[in-house]
Length: 266
Figure 1: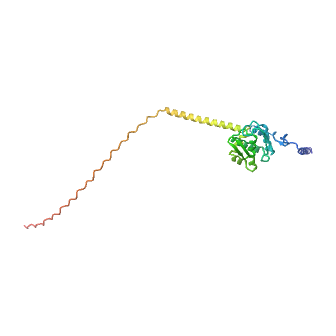
Figure 2 (figure 1 turned 45 degrees about the vertical axis):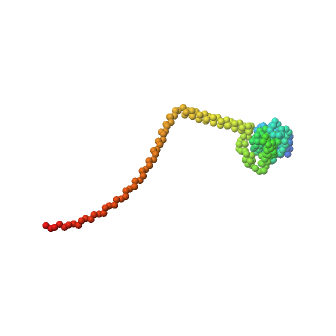
Figure 3 (figure 1 turned 135 degrees about the vertical axis):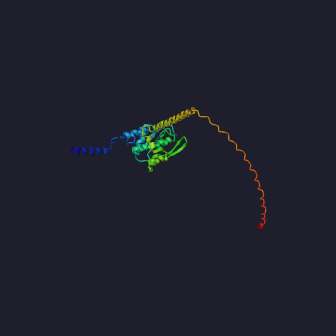
């Protein structure tokens, strides 16, 4: 009976808290919008840390994570970014998708970051962030570029793999790079390290080959035996003209034998 009373008490407390609008565990009230924020949870905190540099500030990263999680409007303010035409002011937009889980939030931000980095934009402005997520036209060093928007393509039912492929990216590589707190920077350092290892390996191979060539050069090779001069063939001897055979001498006619003379009888 005591256990049943305790269970009923807990259920009653939960119902009262829900009716009162109290935030659940792991969530904190957003003082700006009045909606439920997720920055106090461990996944949200890690995402904010991962994308704070990309977003321009911790506040922008927090706004992105909260907005993608709740599907509510996102307000980004400009920081120290100088890439593009917009260098001041703020941008407010609503994600093209509905609420996203933490994993999808990470993929969306990772793809947006990789797309902008591919265009040479490492420190995007709020307007460029909005275009990468929801779609729009931005200005780069090569001119105006229209971005399809990873969230816009997602809202049209496309899978993340298809979206990454259409952007010329590899989803696995992009997500793998986002697994660390420093994201793309860490991936870039790994790429530079791998490149350095490759260069060192090539130099080592070339050095070994050079040493081998030098060792072979030290071994005296026998002098090349000159080939004897080609003996000229004697001129072809002309055959003597064919001697004509003498005409066949006709045999003399056969001499008839004289008749036999009978000898007288003795």
